[in-house]
Figure (cartoon, rainbow, N blue to C red):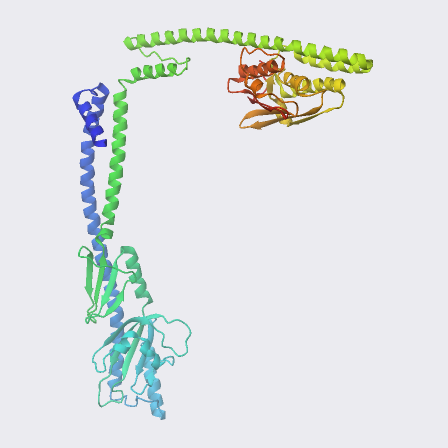
Length: 575
């Protein structure tokens, strides 16, 4: 699918469909820029990788040579120490050094002289120098448990008859007498004494050198180069090997050295992938630079080519903004050519359209105000009829004080209703009008109904259409309650940035048939209840939009719940 799209695009480009001035300039600028860029990048990558690989190879070879030199230096020092001791023991003047503990004064003095020699041969890296006789007695420091020498792996494997030197490799020195501390890593050398005419015949010279520093160099080399280090003796015994498992391959880069002291082979292997990792980094960086350069070249080419079409594109964008309703859009006039004349004509056209739309908006606003006033004057007579009827009925049964109270509250209600200077009033003001209205009903019916209001003080500052709640309360008293008996609960809360008013009563309720026709326009009604609800709903829709207004839920005989939702808006000077 993608291949077909690419093929169609390339066909359209080279067939002439996209052969605009900007497209031609863009492609030619990219070709001129990218060919030298990729050529230079490829040449730089080739030269850099060749130098890096050569330097890394030399570094590895020099590092292995340094390890070989350091290891040979340690082994040579051990071998020279063993040769010095061997020569001392073969000296005819030292005949009192035997296979057992000295028992005479001269033997003790000879032993002390010999051990003084051993101490003088010690260096800061010497871990132990011992001469172990065939009887199990030994010369050297008094910290050796001969029985524990079998813990050394190659000590047990040494042949019964051997000459020259026998290298024990690397191991932990854990053959001390009653030592609970872990042994230090050492490298050992065993030299047998062969002289039938000497008492030391069959004894073994054991030299142990601390190998911590040497092993640290091995580990550092492995960490720096990610190489696998292997040291083997001529008979194939592994003397040292990197801890991590490794699978040798023919493609590995190998550095090899042979120690002249004992012919140990030191081999360092590194996978080809790790060896050429630096080349991979250079390649990745080269690719990143190439991509960034391509993007930069494309951006420069695009800006350069867009210079010739920017005025047409600007005019097209202005037309699109006008189509979205932004009538204050104007295009700058940059010249007196054909495009400049087109800009002038476009600005004149938008100005004319904006003027016509302003006239239409003014006409609609006047129409809306007229509708609101019509609703207002349609509601006012209901209040006057109902209130006057209440005063007449109460005047026949009660004294003048009650009439005075009713007239007071009536005056307050009429003062709020007849003030048509503001169509949007605060929620607090509307609630005060309801309180006066309820006082009139209380004087009329007595203390037979209950009214509960839940509204936070902070919500009373927002506006609501004037005289929208009173018709709803009138419906409760004149249609829902019998002789004013019942409960009213009004709650105003904030929900998702809007105000939500819930007015609930436990009165007679509304039938399903009447509820279905409650908001239908032009529906003939037998009473005034439906008219007040529909007019209140229309007020909210006219002021705040068609998504706001009233919803009514009622069950016959159980009561009615009216819910009003409108946006939060504070009182302004215009209102």
